Amino acid sequence: MNTTDLLLGIPEAELDASGALWTAREIVQQPRMLKRTHALLAGMRERIEAFLAPVTGNAAARVILTGAGTSAYIGECLAAVLDRQLAARVDAVPTTDLVSCPRLHLDPDQPLLLVSFGRSGNSPESLAAVQLAESLVRDVRHLVVTCNADGALARIPARQVLTLTLPEETHDASFAMTSSFSCMMYATLAALGGIAALDTRVAPIADATAAVIAQSRPMLQELALRGFDRVVYLGSGPLQGLAREACLKLGELSNGAVATCFDSPLGFRHGPKTFVTGNTLVVVFVSNDAMTRAYDHDLVDELRRDGCAARVIEVSARPRTPAARDTLAVPGLAGAADVDLLWPYIAVAQVYAFLASRALGLSPDNPNRQGTVNRVVQGVRIHPLVD
Image 1 (spheres, rainbow, N blue to C red):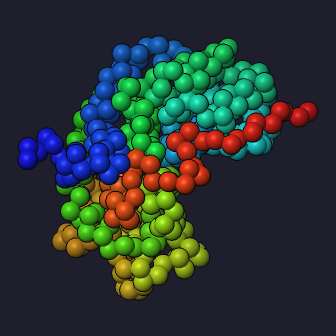
Image 2: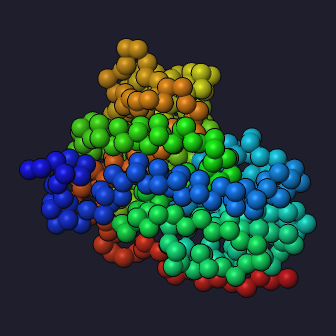
């Protein structure tokens, strides 16, 4: 069979028949979509900079990164990084928190840039968060980052709004967000952190992501077939938000059959370590920062000495020499900042979740056969703002 008929090492016809084709395509397309997203934003650079500058350059202003579920975790990955770069304060606040407790998070007198993420742009909380910001904040701008030009979020009737509509292919058709997550995250880092700063970084990021997708499958397939019933993802700094997204991917694609836990390596000792059993897989996203990496390695070594976990895997762009057997090396980013590791590292978790889903006999494109959860959330009732 021609290799072009394979995705993640599996024939496309087999993927199609088993309800896995869309998820596989959307994982594999990420390196190409990252480059297309960069080109799209580079063409809008002056417009983006002019729109954002009044808030991002204002030390008295605030930027809120917001979304629900996977979209919320974009903010968790990027908030601290962007807060160090911008004059304005940057926070990650999920739409689910903004809508349920708006006055706790929205200051009427503080200039605000609300950055709203939406794969479909039709989540009720996303639209309600925009409306609440418009109602409560005197000076508010909206940056919409969406994968769907036809979604409601792309057409919000706000006073000051700029919409970044990403390539159509990133509007993932599968249940779980993969390329939509990676490209909305990249677009946000580029728009707020500076497009020019990524001109020379996008290719190494995309190439490392492609290499991980192509090379990690044998190890991840072996792990998926082991049938772990618990999986822990750990990471520090921006990688902690990524660990949370990794947990969600596995929870979604396993339809809840695999229990998950996330934390930082240092935080994990403070109680969550009791989650580990003899059938638990622990995955640590290792930092490139020398001090942070030392803490990551300490925890990995401790867990291996304990012998309580079934396997402890290091995902690292700077693998130890000699590399441990359970190391998944990410090439080409040994000198990169941790924020650049977000994309190849999440690809590891996406591929594992995909393979674990198939090992469980599920259809990754729609693993929840009961229909209790949906691609676009349903059943949300938005209550009016009470004075």
